[in-house]
Amino acid sequence: MLYVLIILLAAVLFMCYRAAKFKAPDFTNRTPEPVKIDCPDRIEHFQTLIRMATVSDSDYEKTNKALFKAYREKLRELYPTVCEKSEYSEHGNTAMLFKIKGENRENPTVLMSHYDVVPVVEERWAHPPFAAEIVDGEIWGRGTLDTKITMLGIMESMEDMLKQGFVPKNDIYLSFSGDEEVSGISAPRVVDYLEAQGVKPALVLDEGGAVADGVFPGLDKPVAVIGIGEKGMCSVRLTAEGKGGHSSTPPRHTSLGYLSQSIVNIENHPFKAEVTLPVEGLLKHVGPYLSFPLRLISANLGIFKGLVAKMSMKLGGELNAMMRTTTAATMAQGSKAHNVLPNESTAMINVRLLNNTTPRQALDRIQSLCAEGVTAAFETEIPASPYASTDSENWQKVAQAVGDTWTDAIVSPYLMIAGSDSRHFSKICRDVYKFSAWHVSTELRGTIHNDNERIPVSEVSKTVEFFHRLIARL
Image (cartoon, rainbow, N blue to C red; front, side, top):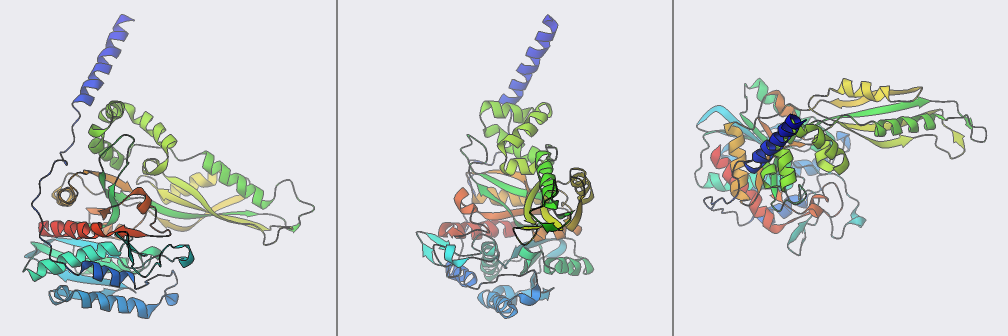
């Protein structure tokens, strides 16, 4: 027994020693060279782009094509040097592609954004969603965060640098689509075009992570999270057949009842949590700055993986979503009258897939949890993207540009739990990163796809500064 206690004590002391020595790459106390930015009209340009209500529709024929065309023309008008110094082409329904030639074409970069936005309910906004008003130091409008700010940062930086005679070391492509929000064809068409041209990007950067506060309890530093992959997405339709008729003589379970039981079963049996590569990277970089108990866990992750998985379920939120394939019941339909039994009831389950879970595996598991007579079938299925590297020169280029711009932030990889156009580029590029170049509050992040979307005026300059730093490294 004494030997067991000695071994346990030694193990505890060893884990404590590892926690005490736990170090991460030093992304704090930076003193980067200042960036001289000559973009005096950036706010006015941003307001111009926000005022164009480029709301996309899954049915392209319902899209305001004239407005989208006018937007593309306006962008080229605002940035004449980019147009003069690049080869321009359009692809799919809405994609704009600029090619800026570098000193060589061996390791090109693609910088991405989308200029379409989701619909609004104007009466719920405190200020008009397409007026781009500046109120209390914030620019209001749909697209200020998602993601016309990214397009502005790329174009302002490139325009400024090209005016100063900048020539990149490698070719740089600027790829902007106008149907990302509806999973349109434009970005895939750009990928097809580049592949046909023999272009194999070394690095792709699109929207994704950002600089965020309150990532972990007790952490007093902001964390700049760079997505190294994104989850897949499936829409699964559950269908339950039943006998219709008058609701005054119901069966023991209606089709809607069987359907409801299926949804409860799915919610009560979540997919198993696991410490994925992005989670390991996040804990490695953030762990040294956490309280000692959390630092102990992070420094000895091989021992505490099971505990971390259990904690994620209780904590919920983004950490939980990064560690498991998730399901969410989002829509349901029974009969169309309150006193009529439904012949058929349907529901939609939105599934977000981890990298090691295929759409078919997810569907089979959902089907196994369905009640009698309920069937599950795909409406859409998009596999998760592969992971980009975190130990390469490409990672360092992005991470250093982030750290030099937000000097007080911890820079870390993470898993993007939403979807973006950049997933298509994994077909031709290993290192596809996802980072939205702004630092805003949790409240403002909650306005994405929501009412009252807005961004501090000060962050517009930071976004331009970030892309200036990154482009100089390319």
